[in-house]
Image 1 (cartoon, helix red, strand yellow):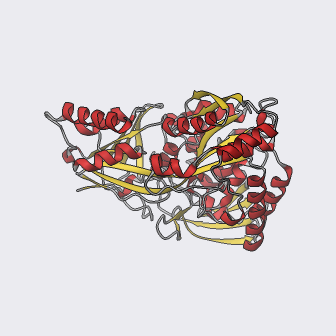
Image 2: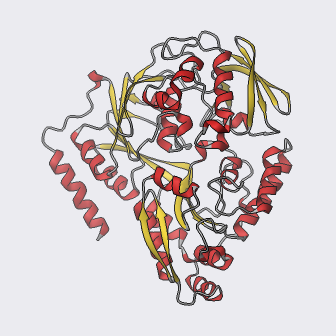
Image 3: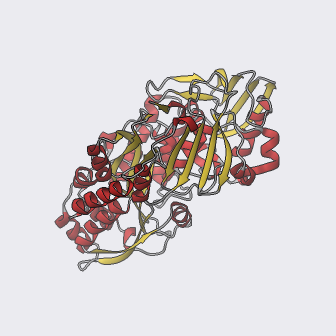
Amino acid sequence: MKHTVLKSTIAGIALAAATGAAWADKANDTLRVAFTKELENVDSYFNSSREGVVMQRAVWDGLIYRDPVTNEYKGNLATEWEWIDDTTIEFKLREGVTFHDGSDFTADDVVFTVNYVADEANGVKTQRNVNWMKSAEKIDDYTVRIMLKEKFPAAIEFLSGPVSIYPSDYYAEAGPEGMGLEPVGTGPYKVVSVVPGQHFVLEKNENYHDSPKGQPSIAKVDIRTIPDVNTQMAELFSGTLDLIWQVPADQAEKLAEMGQFTVSNESTMRVGYLSMDAAGRSGETPFNDIRVRQAVNHAINRQELVDALLKGESQVISTPCFPSQFGCDTDAAVSYDYDPEKAKQLLAEAGYPDGFTTDFYAYRDREYAEAISSYLNAVGIDTNFKMLQYSALRELNMKGETPISFQTWGSYSVNDASAMVSQFFKHGSLDDARDDETLEYLNLADSSTDPDVRVENYSKAIKRITEQAFWAPMFSYNTNYVTTNEVAYTPTADEVLRFTTVTWN
């Protein structure tokens, strides 16, 4: 029935657009793109959405760049770097780089940015991305040192991803609010228009430096927030959009069959998971009991979800991190087979022979969340389903007001376990477990310069988290990109939509 409705919907869209479809006009040299979720603030330090990551990589640069195919680290705003000691890195900076407002890039910008974002009082949204830095100091105009609070061997990986450099004078005056409305970076694209959460227009930076990101080809990128996928597809047919992404598997399959579009599927580092309030942050709930949390893990048929809904490059995940990340030891994880009878037995042992009712939160992929909710309902966990915007659910989660929620995390495409497992299990605002033993392991793993010690302690943390069933890891995501046949784009596995690599056919 679902497939019949879907086929009819797409057929209807195609029929409505069949007359006078205006395909991408290369003469205008404008790529028209849809975002599904709202971007709360363009300032890359004050949002935590995937859309924010995409904008960050287009508008700003970091000191270092990691090639998404080879994983090789290359100089970007820095040309070279060296460890002075275990907690100090010195960078030689690229000369001749200018920001979009015409100001020169120097060590002052690095020092100001690092000192600002590392200060917790300034409220960077994802502290894990920056709180390992202590400060920065200028050696000369094109030499700077970054000091770490303690040993942090993943520093280079983080500096190649979520740490962007801002213009010091402008940011000191404009702050996050001003940067969100009139962003200024050194990146391949500059922002010429912002309607917060709705519409963003980027323009090629004609003065872009010799960056490993590559030079932008397309003159303008016009991005609109369109939450409904069917509306996105209708605009793709009518020629008012050129590229949509994060398209559900069923829609992508049908679009691919039509021959009018190019559909690409690529794996991502994003993991879907259920977080349960083991610590009792939302009050006394059934999830305080390990048997209930184990029951949740046994209640869900992860493989069926992957096969029926996600498809593509997705896989079942048993770890609170993505398997490719350094330290994400899949062998250390306790896996829970799909066993609804075992789930019911555990609920009865926990004192819930007739089950219980709970609020259940989600912010994306309603179809996936509803399927998970149905599995829970089947073993006696009745869910009051609550679908929220991402920013709203994140705020509730930070306040400890969500007994159980379906969420996802893409680790900012940082290929280190600390970007996920340490993000959620080190007693921060998003930690629903607050487990001291896990914290001890992660502190050792995050700070050791010995790779073997890091792996050993990440393994212990993963074993502890999964034995205690603090989470119910679900699956990894894949991303479907759909473009008109006039657009050429090859996606990468890090879930970063790179406008610099989009060209016209």
